[in-house]
Amino acid sequence: MNMGTLLILEAINVRERCSIMPEHKRKRKKKKKIAKEKMSATKKILIAAIIAINLFTTACLVIQYLTQQDVSSTLIEYWFNFWTVEIFSMAGIKISKLHVATKLGLDDNTNTDTEEPVSDNEEDA
Image (cartoon, rainbow, N blue to C red; front, side, top):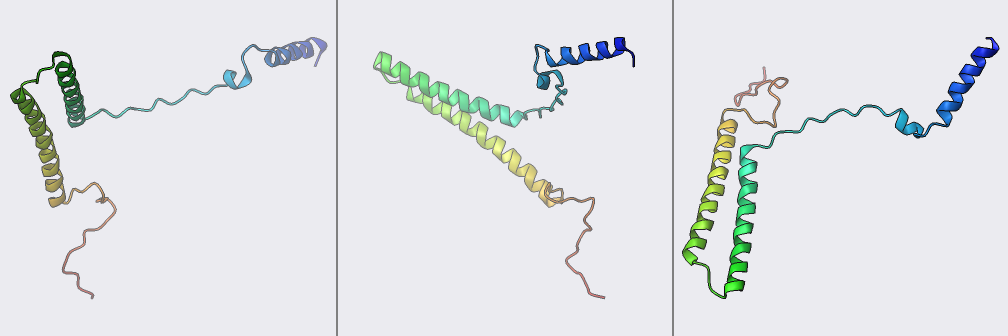
């Protein structure tokens, strides 16, 4: 190598060592994007129910404190009945889906690709 090449290589080496950015930031690898799972409608409704119940309860307590009068008991009763029916309906749908899947043998815990079906009447030959 000639003197000019050595000077250029030394300049590159010095520039890398004296860089403003630390080395761990310069050689940063691109992070893989993690795909977020979509939230199911059932979870969204359940979260909305919890938030609505908490907001309604807080609003009733504040109104009762500020006005020194009771909030209508009928309104409170119907509000909580609505959300109770909504939550139990969603639970019933989920339970029925799991029951049907279990009855048909589509349970998520078993791997149907690798396991052979086992019958109740196994005979040793």
